[in-house]
Length: 286
Image (cartoon, rainbow, N blue to C red; front, top):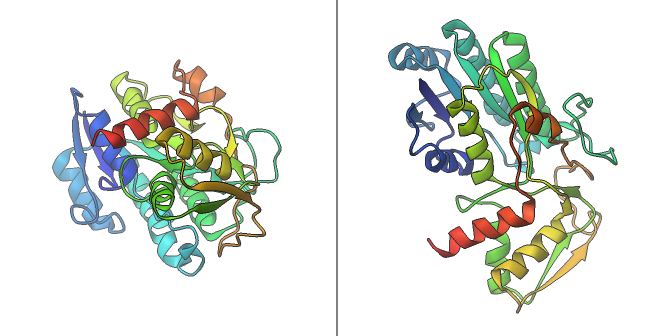
């Protein structure tokens, strides 16, 4: 099969490069320079030329605060481009694996969100990602939607790398302790996506949740980063959302229920602390 991976230079796209390195299938990684996914003509030409069987859409506008001022730009990537990819998949009888987010939920739950939980995004980023999901459904293409959250990796800009930089330059870092979710290692998600493809399970269409197991606050996450990385000179202190206001409102609780994914694809998912240690070890070995 020929697999197109969009957003190939982002952290999930780069993790996909590693996870697919020994695949028997043909993976083509693109970013804006190679394929303009907001152009129906460019997508059609690419599909016709390359004979695409599967699209893994890792491309996304993820600047959550900036999206409040640039919702139309975010919508172009998170919604319009997704609609065009879905339409192309339908036309060419290809399967779309689309990456979505916990931010489609309002965060008012007290137990993990199931796939059937009602979306109610509370920020621009979440609205555009939910619109993208709806576009996939409306297209009628074969699709697997994977909602994930709090993604980090060795690559690009993310919470882990920001914390490591702050730990090296400050005596104290204050981190929000009243927003609860689950850190997700992009390497684990990439391996899960590749396993779906390699094991021939792309026919298991539907919406699934994938994050690492367990739950924590951003403060807990930061404290564990400090512990595992040995950054003991910087104090990690908790604060409230009210004490650290941001342009975009974040869900207070957005833990995802992964039981459907594990049952359908007959696989286990690593606990978040285990995966964090693995990622930091890889960072140290770079």
